[in-house]
Picture 1 (tube, helix red, strand yellow):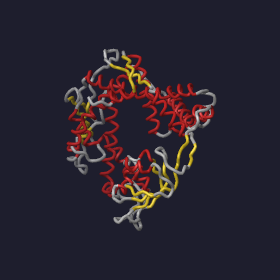
Picture 2: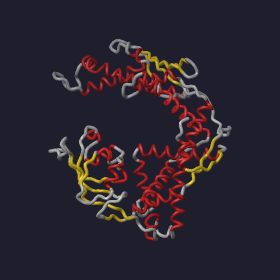
Picture 3: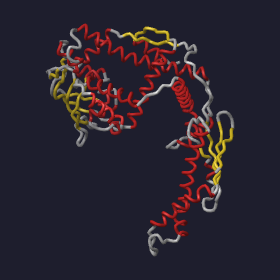
Picture 4: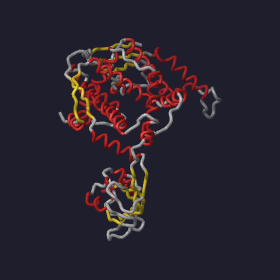
Length: 452
């Protein structure tokens, strides 16, 4: 076997793998002998089928499979030993492989295109003009949060007459073209949230509704989202799209939530016994929680700004034409060259950031250990239980639950990524000179989502 790398330029190369018969024949013969031992062919005793017949039946498949295994192992070993920093997996030149005669050929040559990561370094100490937004919690946001929580812990009542914040429970019945209930049509009982109705005229008419009142309405106007509209009728979204009928809605009862009173019992339910002792303390606790949520938004904005600044500053080159061919070849579903061109800039931007981030992680020796992930998962579980008003489990039970969560590969990968993100954010805040700027949430939204 002979493996060589031919440089095309700083970002592109071709790896050439040459195999002769001695590289694969012994393994192929062994597999064919195993096939012969276990082959059941009418007219022959088990283990005595002529080898020529075995080769005719499975010989080519065995040869192809074995050569593919040798290629995979050899390529990986060569890439590792040569310290090649590849962007993606090697791309075989399939047109050359199509010319192989597997029946008669003894020696083989395979060529693989590879894209090599650019050489660069990242200096977080360099002057990057960045702002870090300190988002102020507005009193109206505290009021809204407290109202929502009070409703969550409130009591359900059934008044006689509906008000703007109430919910109606009733029955939807499909109508025909004459305004009569359609025979075999859709009939389903569900809730209408008056404040969620997008048709303002309909919304106004529902205020003051009483049990047994009826309304003719378009079910696609009872909510903004098609999933909620479909649920109201008891159908799926695809069926909803085909519905053009009006519906009769008969009110059966009115549901109204009476918000919980702000007293010690309420404070204890929300934050645990004796954590908060008065309204002022409760508002302060709510403000603290909202600030934490807003700081997540501020961190997300900072990360986006860092990405933009570093990508623009480093001006990384990529083997673009190779990557476009690789995307077409490796995509599970067929994708056209036009689609690749249309989406490539965004793909390249993501790849550049991945390279930069990996370099920062390596330069600063950032690591996330399994023990850290377990502790982090336990913390998330404790927050979840507290939010549901459940008592805390003991440490042993929490550890056991966390380990069960981490057995899910996708969950584990997401948690590792979350912890790397957290450590990187700590690094950015400690390494970069950030100019803090206090801002209202409304103004932050304008800054964060403004089109550049």
